[in-house]
Image (tube, rainbow over all chains, first blue to last red; front, side):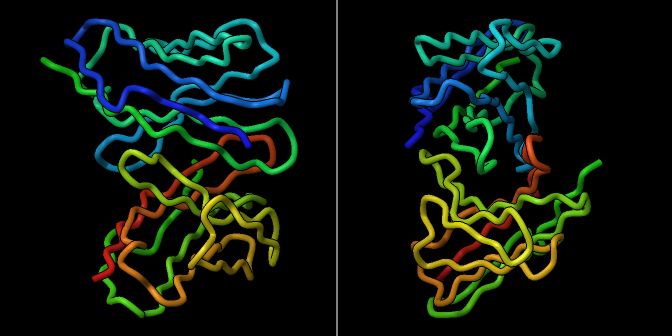
Amino acid sequence: AQTVTQSQPEMSVQEAETVTLSCTYDTSESDYYLFWYKQPPSRQMILVIRQEAYKQQNATENRFSVNFQKAAKSFSLKISDSQLGDAAMYFCAYRRSGGAQKLVFGQGTRLTINP
Amino acid sequence: DVKVTQSSRYLVKRTGEKVFLECVQDMDHENMFWYRQDPGLGLRLIYFSYDVKMKEKGDIPEGYSVSREKKERFSLILESASTNQTSMYLCASSAMGSPLHFGNGTRLTVT
């Protein structure tokens, strides 16, 4: 079975600084998708960024980028120029390509932004 | 914009009660999911459905059942609520190959 591990329960960063959230996963599949979701206090799960495993180029969305290391099964999220609105729970998630569309989630990392 | 609506934001029930959590999506998505969120455990899949009247067990189906009589609606049923089912419940939907869209969650307390 696939598993996703986030080893940092909590992280904090100064406003305008850069922070990296870690995620590792375990799978025997070669084709899959990886995601980072953000959950602010409103509880709404928001898709931050998505990476297809067959693409070597790391995905980027404005201030959010990933470091995807397929061989190491690592998928970290870098947030640049941190803003107060980035404070939230962040979840890493995995989905195999094809078949059932279900996501497997990590335990989550609570990110605090210090003004 | 995709909208996934969960009928209750907060719910308090007594042990042994039958509990229904309702979820409706407005984008004609084939897939619908029920997750449970607990601190330190992340989101865990309870059940999912990829078509009307079709359902599959997720990782933690014990104590739960589901119903999908219409494409837009996916119900989670706790046949006899217990205190260990106190949790946040999140519903999601997706089209095939597309990211999941989530509702705002129902925080259920069983006393």
